[in-house]
Length: 462
Image (tube, rainbow, N blue to C red):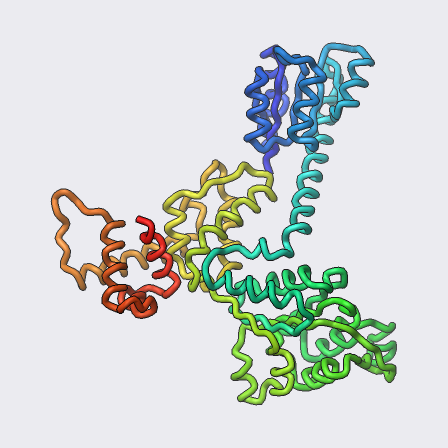
């Protein structure tokens, strides 16, 4: 990560000296400003990591200037470099929040050492601020991004059930955000003061899953050197999230069913009964009804768990949410990596919107993280996207264009045409031919119902 250091001094010579000092460091970028307006603009608009200043700012006292900077960003370190050897000035500067006070001429590596310490502190402060935001916002419904009807329905259902103690079953393809919904339900429930314990049933071998869920006594098996509580006990008075529950074997399923019915368990190798009060939220990307029919999942347990089902739609069925999600990820990763707030080019927006996203929100998130890492300027372009994604988008566009030309022998008039007007005409014509049936209209245009709805809403106000 490149640290941006602002140097402000009324002597151009001092600025040149500081720039020269850090010129060979690839991880430090030095910028300069000599008037109050420019300095304030930098602090407000740029992501600065450190200010080095002599505090002599026109039309403002030294300490007043320092106060203003700290009021704008209290965690931004300021190193005061001055020829004033007054102890009183140094003490006052430190009281107003200066990180360090260095007298010119610099002795040895005093400035370099101070800069290194200040940048380390700034980095830790930014990381802590990011983590605080994560803790405060990561587990609420506001973090489930999207305005499509399907995702709004998910939010409404999750909001309703969070106020109850009912068992919830979250369905959805891999990468759609099932655990995010589960966590949001827990942290908006009466159990939010209790623990949320998660376990992925597909990530553990069958022999370990049972001991992880129910715990074991000392000597229960080879290697059991001490008593260990299972996930059910650890989640007592809170919520247990069972992800990919379709991968749970029948033996463990029987024990889980008993626990749900009796609210008690026995650890492996033990005879003592342990009472537990746990809310269960489970998730799967499989069709559990098919598993029941094949005898791979207990029917009685299925109906115990499937009290309140919530289906999260795949991203391809809600394309209107893609750009909103992408911009949110850009903002998150820009802040996390200490970069300027990046913009997304129009061409990238078109590529993101037209892609299938078989990996759903997780795939989109990974794609944006990669783009933010690669972007060196202030705008994400197609050069920062995976080549496969760009090629897929181009191929999809060409295929659709060729098919349209075969179906419609359109001759471009000399004065040209408006693509938006043509698209609007086709959308409205499809709606008319289908007698306002949006599903049929979408099929006429080779679109998903979600994409067609997005197009229709786009032109509804034009």
